[in-house]
Length: 295
Image 1 (spheres, rainbow, N blue to C red):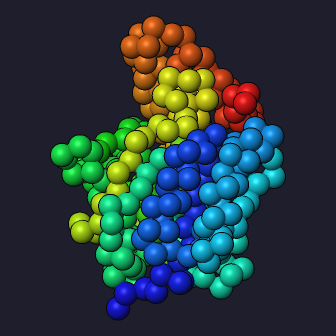
Image 2 (tube, one colour):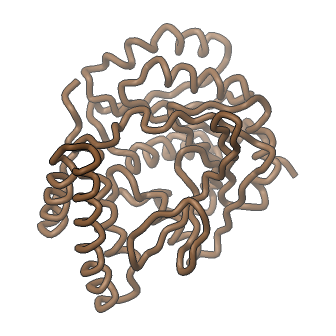
C-alpha cells in the first residue's frame, strides 16, 4: 500500500546555493509534495534566504507549506536534519524525505518510492549520471574505515543522505547522531538501523540527478577536516568494546595519514594534511570546529 504524499515532509538543507536549492524545491513540488522544510545553514546574514524569498512566496501562494529553519549559523547536516524532522513531527507527519539541494527528481520518481515506504524504513532512488544509472548505496568497512561504492567483504551497506525517504515513526529520538557535523552520519545511522532490524531498499523505478559537492568543495579545509573527523568518530561509535575501539584507532592512524598524503600530492596542496592533523587533534581533545568559510 502506497504512503500518502500528505504524510511526507521534504527536508532540504541550503548552504549558499539559492538557485540550486530553488530548483530542488521546484522539483519536489513537481512530484506533488506540499510539505517542505528548508533548513538554511548558509551563515551568510540571511543573504541566501533573501535570494529565495520571491520563489518561496510563489510556492506558498499555490498552497505549498514551506517552513524555514535557521538560527543564523551553520548547524551542520545532522543537527539541521533533526531540526527539520522535529518540524515534521510537530505537524503530525510520519515520513521525511532527505534531499540534497543539488539534486532533483526525474518525474514520477517519488511516487514510486512511496509504494515501498510502508514496507521499509529507508527507501532511496537510483541516480542518473549522464547515460549511466548508479546506486546510492555505499559500503563501509568499519575496521579499515574505508568507503566503497560496491559490495566488499566485511562491509555493511548504508543509504546515502543525498536522497532517502525515512519512516520517522521508527525512531523515538533523533534520526541522526549530532556528534557528526558533516559527513558520516549516514554510516552511523545505517549501523544503528541494522542493530535495530530496520531495513533499507532501493527503488529501481525512481531516479534523481545529482551534481555532487554542490556546497562543500572537495579539497577545501572544511571538507578535509570533516571527512577525517567522521572517520575518527565512526571508529569510536562502531566498535563493540574498548579493545576493538583502540584497534580501529590504530588502523585509522595509518589509513587517514596515507589518505592525507595522497590527496596533498594530487591537489598539490597541504590542506589535506592540515585537515587530517586538525581533525585528529580535535578528536583527541573532544572539540569540534565548524570551519564554515566566511560568506
